[in-house]
Image 1 (cartoon, helix red, strand yellow):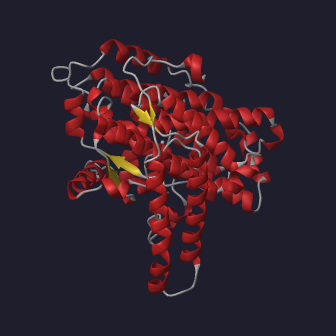
Image 2: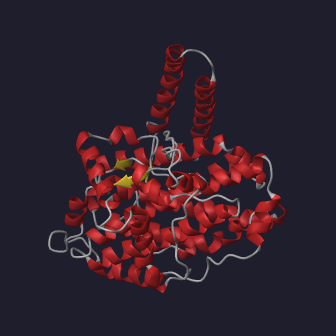
Image 3: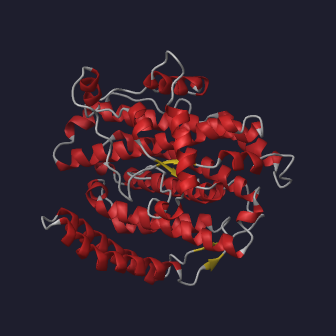
Length: 431
């Protein structure tokens, strides 16, 4: 699911605003539940077994590959360093699983459309991409040609994307397990979505091997902090991240098909089919939202919808502008690409969210560009050699200006939208 071009733009900018002591406790509980292996089974082995559970759905086993640093640690050398996190870093998420069980209990929630869930389940069982993620010799050869700064940019893209997809795997897998008794159809869809995320993460991690690297995902599972989101927020944010992922993948695929000279690495050739996984995931979250009309039909839902649209769009725009060399390397103008993706995602989102942002208003982009400038100032302050106290003082006016711009964007007149009669599938619109 966030950065690179993985579908994980899950409100990294606003996560701290939604955290609480109770949230931290729930997060810790999930982390412990995931990381504590059964007796006699090491953690990395258990992580591998999680992927093997879904083996019947996949053509290739995904395994956690130890990095060079991990091998050194095993030999008793320097301990691993926990990856540094910032507001724009891909995150791992958890939620209130007991509330999730209540939301999808057929005896409690009479709004559940079982026919729709069964239709979606048939789509996921079909597993259209079962044989799609098959590598060839072209990958290694392309990686060897990438040198200098562009090589490092591609490595970072693979790392961030793999982390984001693995984050989705963990969340969906746990939801599939927790909901098995409450709602078997919904539980199986979550399990099959975790299959997709595992497949994507494995494919990306294998790509890192072309650059003689690999992510130790078992270590990441234990070392990463888990951000708590209420189920309502999970629905909004994950719907957006899956749909924005679709538009990113398909836009890049179409661009490179029309401009093959910029096809620097073959992973992009897989994006046409890959993006359909993201689209199906988004359709499922649309069905989940329709099954909870309280998340769509009042003034609070409108405020939250705009809030998550803003946080997801801003996160993506700032992230990508920090990495414009990547997009320039494949022949894209970063800001034009992002605005296209934001506009298309917003139009899609408007079919289910009760209100969305007016992203086609020129003022919206002007303020995004100003946020980019302010973010660059923050980065320059962080890199400066002045004393920490002075750095903090220098940050105050910049952060204040960013907050002002975010509030101005949020309070722009919204676009009223959404319908509970929204069609279940969108092939005629987005495929």
